[in-house]
Length: 285
Ligand code: GLP
Image 1: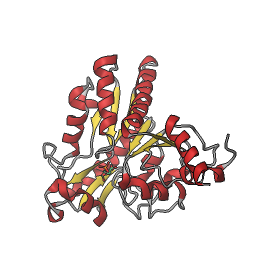
Image 2: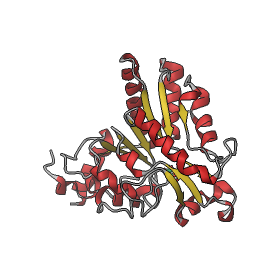
Image 3: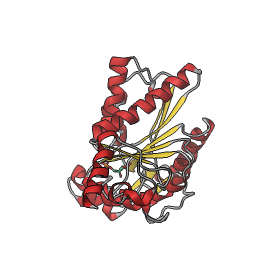
Image 4: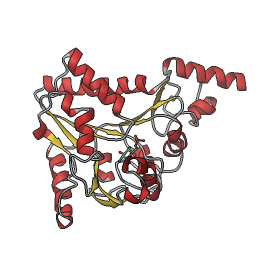
């Protein structure tokens, strides 16, 4: 059995061979490393942009921050610089922003997006949308409604890129977020603040709240791609993909999305049935 497992695992990692046979609750693809997976996702986004441009329509991208999508953004920049990918007519909506937060702050997601993508491509910055961490508290609810209305005016997001928090949050939709939750000011979990503490110079200086796109608009995206790499994601990927659908693990809601794929490296995928016990999933060739 051990030899068989190793054989199957090796064949999976060698060529991202699809063993799922539709038995997976969430379709997953995994690759030897984060770079390979990131290139696949970047290509999908580039293809979408080119398709939309050819049809004279806007491409509407939902974008994420965090360490995980950085390589994917680097590949999009490379495609722009070396392979003529233009971002003209592309509209973007970021998932979230800490509150309060100045756009030029080292930890602002506005700054993150500029540094990791927007400063290096030809996107019209008027088409870039990121939750505003500077607005007055009393204006947040109206801002969130407008943010959603703007997405709705496009007919929803064409693709939503996601990372995943160690507790299973997507965007900043923490454990307990409802599947129909709206864009709103959310209280950050202790685990989320703990994970971010080094960026802010300690837990006590780490924000306690953030503005986040709600689960509803994530689930409404026509396509969802979630990236997760490294040992810190192994357990939560297992829970999100193979555990029950529960608001305790908001990423598990994606089990009910009709067009979602998780792109993983082999470490993040290590506890999935597809790796551990592939013969339980259906016929193996
Ligand atoms: C933050 C972001 C999420 C991101 C998560 C994981 O909480 N709001 O969008 O997915 O961090 O970050 P990382 O990719 O650095 O592990």
